[in-house]
Amino acid sequence: MADPDGSFCARNQPADTWYLAGTSKGRAERRCSVPKGRPVAFPVLNFTGTKAECAARLAEAQGTVVWGRSDVAVERIEPTPIRIEGVEGNPVTGKAGTVTTHGCGLWVRLGPVWDTGPLTIEGSAGSVSVSVAYDLQVG
Image 1 (spheres, helix red, strand yellow):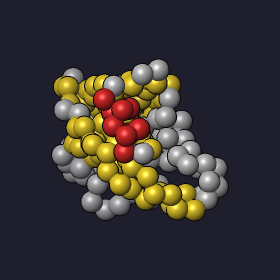
Image 2: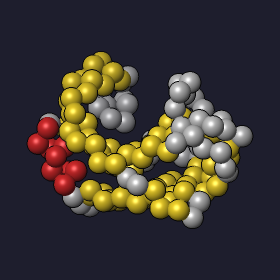
Image 3: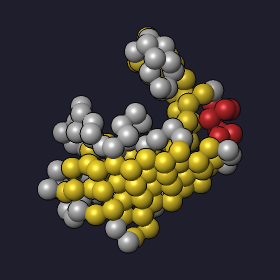
Image 4: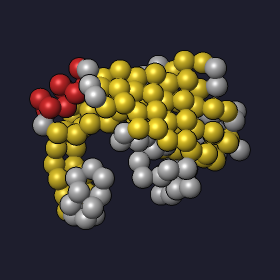
């Protein structure tokens, strides 16, 4: 979320899936190198709160994703109990320590990626709208 240009794209990536960052508001443009053949996952919109708050935000959520020239299916993730471990000033809870809450949102999972290309992520819910344009370099 706090990666304005993709400089931190490779930071702390697990071996099985490559995660791309969304954005909490507005527009971002990022360039990111992804290992060839690695599955990719990312949020279109991501919410936290009580189960009811999460469900209400999700009910008004809309999103589209385009990879290259193809539309990609967006998956609706229903409110799920989650635990967030954060440092002071983090963009999700703002405080250090562990917080138990619910998470929900619109997510995408791409199978193993083999080709370089543009990835456009757009979402909205109520007054919040986000747009992320990735230049994905696969290799």
